[in-house]
Image 1 (spheres, each protein chain N blue to C red):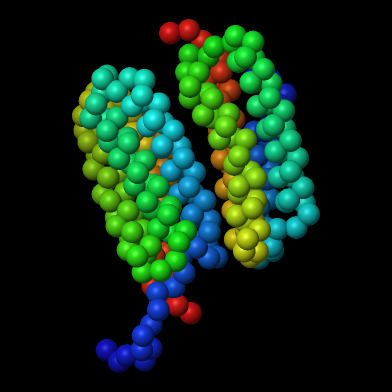
Image 2 (cartoon, each protein chain N blue to C red):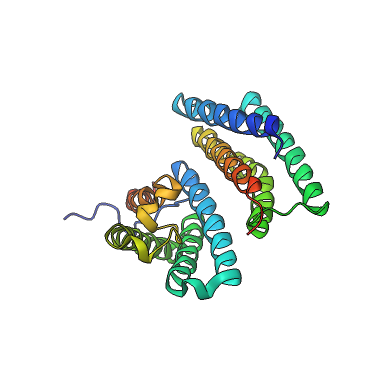
Amino acid sequence: MVETTPAAEPGVTATGFGRVLVVLYAVMAVGACSRSAVQVSTRFGEAPIAYSLSAFAAVVYVLATVGLARRGPAARRLATIACTVELVGVLAVGTFTVAVPSDFPDATVWSLYGMGYVFIPLVLPVLGLWWLRRTRFAG
Amino acid sequence: MVAPLVVALVGGGLALFVLGAVLAGLGKVPGRVVLGLAALLEVVVAVQVVWAVVSLVGGYRPAETLVVVFYLLGVLVVLPLVVAWSLAERTRWSNLVVAVGALTVMAMTARLDQMWRVTGG
């Protein structure tokens, strides 16, 4: 490999298409946070695991939104980790809810691969990771 | 919810979504039509929210009152925030940003209308 661009800086994620991504993530973050806040504060005892997972997903969306909206290597790392966790989460919870339907009422954004949110939770991390890769270097 | 307003918000949201997506596809930056439509939609949202708040203060209690209140707050701020974000960097993508906001208003209104009808335990 020939290094033609020494000291390549990471590119900005919150520009162009990235700004659409930030809005999608922000909407999911607010939605997941409010949903989770209601679940945890009013009926946490009913399904502690599902509602904890719901809260965890909400935090992941917030971190991904912040990571994608801000510039710099730390923000990029945060966004990459958050999107990866999100992808693993939606696949794991999605598969689990399909396999064992009764244990997870539609309690998290990731249940049934995010069907309750028109599969946005499934598409979003893929788009996020693709965009992070695409904008790895400035210019 | 007030049926004509719900219809206006769902229909208007869908129209703005399609318009924003098409204009983004054509490579245009947001102009008067998109911003005007967004402003108009926000006025309808505000009327709907005020009506809902008056009903809640008047004693109407949907089953999920807390969630309804979250939705009312959320739906009110979506378009202003999204338009501000879209104007901070004006490219074709700004139109898609507004389109996503319009779709969000549409989805939230539909869900709100659904939750509003369910009362009691």
